[in-house]
Image (cartoon, rainbow, N blue to C red; front, side, top):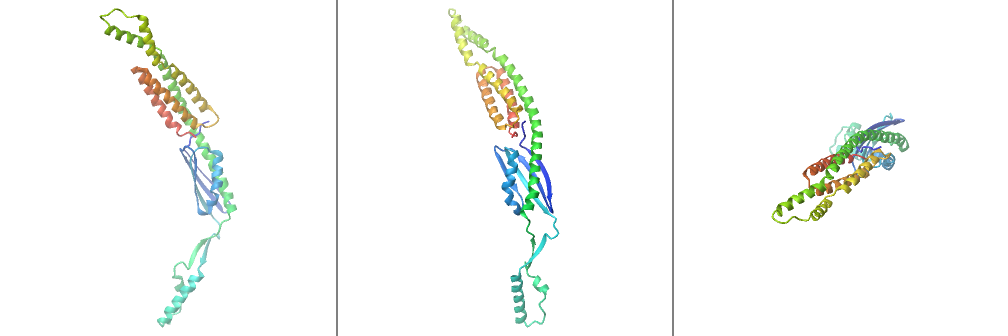
Length: 293
């Protein structure tokens, strides 16, 4: 089953007082590119997070944003810079003595100094952190895969309809291409008849040989056979158990090569217009295939 590379998921898990909120977004990419954003205290888990994502996803740029909330009552704490407080007190004392002041130095005076008392966070237990983060990442990765598969179903329907359209147009081209030898023979005979109207009649066998040479140069039967084969292979890939975006992308290049060859060989305006329509459909398929994992 094909999977889209564009998707979104969001999950949340709690362990003790710690809650891990995870948001995952994925975009088109030729390779698997995992980017992790999280608090500094969680950077140690980056490789573990990437390993979890890599179990389920093979391609795409996947951005994970992790938010941690700790509801512990003793989480907020404060630290005192005793050296700075003592130094500030000595400075105040020196000013008092030099100016002969009678005012006492109070705690309020010392607290006016910056960063004497600063907030600090209680160090969080890494094991408890991971016990909240791991299931959140796993759930987010699974939900992302579900959404990718859901989007893949929509892509499947669109691609299946477009490849059917290409097959129908190819049958029309095959029918028109069968008329090319007769067309070239008649065109050659008309031209020779015009140029040799005052001379003896030319050998009809030689005319047929020349027409056959021209027709052979414009024969597109091999290209049409290969295109039918590509169509069958395209459908097989769509129906396979794995998502094979790379194979489909390669196959589109083969389609395009055959279409270009038919267009250059045809020498027929009607046939050329049909090839242009085919290439238009192929371009739409190519754009959709870029979203497939």
